[in-house]
Amino acid sequence: MTKPVLIVGGGPAGLSAAHALASAGQKVVLVEKEDRLGGAPILDGYAKLVPSHEWAKDAIGAMVDRVQGREGVDVRLNAQVQSFDGEPGAFTATLKDGTKIEAGSTILTTGFTHFDSVNKPEWGFGTYPDVVTTVQVEQMISSGKGIRCPSDGRVPDRVAILLCVGSRDRQIGREWCSKICCTVSANIAMEIRELSPKTNVYIYYMDIRTFGLYEGDYYWASQEVHKVKYIKARIAEVTSDGKRLLVKGEDTLIKRPVSIPFDMVVHAIGMDPNVDNMTISSVFGVDLNKYGYIAKQSTYAHLAETNRPGVFVAGAATGPETIDDSIAQGQAAAMAALNFKPAGKVAAE
Amino acid sequence: MPIHEKSLIRKENLVENENLIIDGVDVSGHWSTFITGRSLTDYNDDMQDEIAALPGGENIHRCWQCGSCTNACTVNAVNPEFNPRYWIYLIRLGMEEELLRDKDIIWQCVSCNKCTYACPRDVAPEGVMKATAHWLELKGHTPKSPSTEFDEEFSGQVIKTGKIEESRVIMNFFRRTEQPLAQPWLVALIKGLAFRFPVFYLMRMGMAVVRRPRTRNWAKSRRAINEYVQEVEAANRAAVGAKGGH
Image (cartoon, rainbow over all chains, first blue to last red; front, side, top):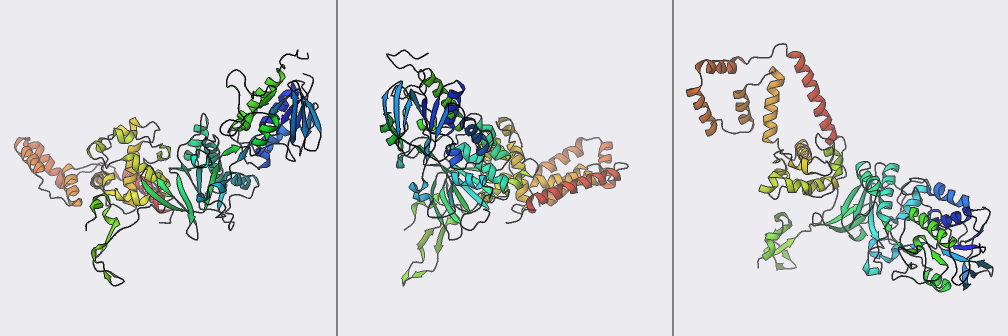
């Protein structure tokens, strides 16, 4: 394929696909709507990543570095695709500023959007300043300012992390498990305990899904080494007694209602489909699945394919995904794009 | 009008005022019955650490609440209220008030260690029960258990003389636990001995009670043992007392 591959989105999946294609000698155009590459881990200021414990700015930063400025990789920042026409093997993407890009195929690595906790008002986000999200805690850690209550800057004695905020919730149309929040919460809990050992961390859960090898390194390490406590309860509401936050729910293991004071409450927010997915769907002519993510064609035979030949997808654009799996999928999509032969045409050798 | 479901409500949560008039209406007696909230309102953040610091409690943080211990438990088979799994949960999360409700059952663990073998996480629940009973004692929630009294009498004699004198252990144990010395089984035992035991041995036993023989050159050992015991006891006290707040 002589025409470049268009990659839409410069997060872990897009960076991985770009690197793989460039390494194989394939020209790439990487379009990113923000002013820098890196995706959520960089744009949202993540702290240490699962499972490597490397800082996001180092780990994902290195992925950016090996792509940016590399020969054969044309990076367009602050750019969005407005229309996408043509045939497989000969697509033309028009950016919002009118620039046209010729591409043989394209890979959508458009990622996800963090759940907005305002949509669960009973849990106090937006009402009480000391109710924050996992993303905010990531930023507290990565900024080096430490764990502080936003209201008055004090170090909290007691922090509650509520799992499944914006996940597994039929009431708000989000029936999926966001897959990463249990592990991320255990990771954050350990970092809080390390940064301020006097802070006690309690995690309220319905199920714990620190799947695979995270069982030992996150679920148990958080309890055995860092003394993080797990309480089986789905919290009903977060209010305030005027001084501290009051977390109310039922401890289902002892069948008793609880109404416990906390200094800080952290929402372990889930992964929504990218808010732009409707637009992306219509611009690129790709179907969305019933949850609103970009639909994959087949699990087994045609990895990374969408319903439209020549348009591939990878990473959290397809559903809640971990960073390392997004990276693997980016490479899979790169391989699919490299091998792509438009129907009825002989691929240029 | 009685509240039919009273049996389902904990007694201490039912409140009734004998004499109460609200806005001129007499609501004395059962008319003023109300039920106080049963919400748990706080965690004791230190409880797990304190119990983990006592001998036997070290692995409590490993528990994942599977219930293997309770299922294996000898005492639970007799008394369903005896539930190690539940207490471990309460301790781990610091639900002190809840645990104290069961303070008079926890010490009943018979140390059969079936739970120790059943536990997939190597929590050693038997040790946790021991540490918990110990914690309740150290915190003053429960008096010394009869077995602690026995152990103290027994080890006290060993430390003092290097030997134990059975009749003295028994006598002092009954005195400490305020039980009559004339226990029927003991009377029967002594009678049996008096009639059937060779006179020579009976005389030796009698002499031992009076003379209290000691192990030779015991002083050095006693000093070492006492030192160690004091060290351990100080550590235990520090474990439950050093972190204040309750």
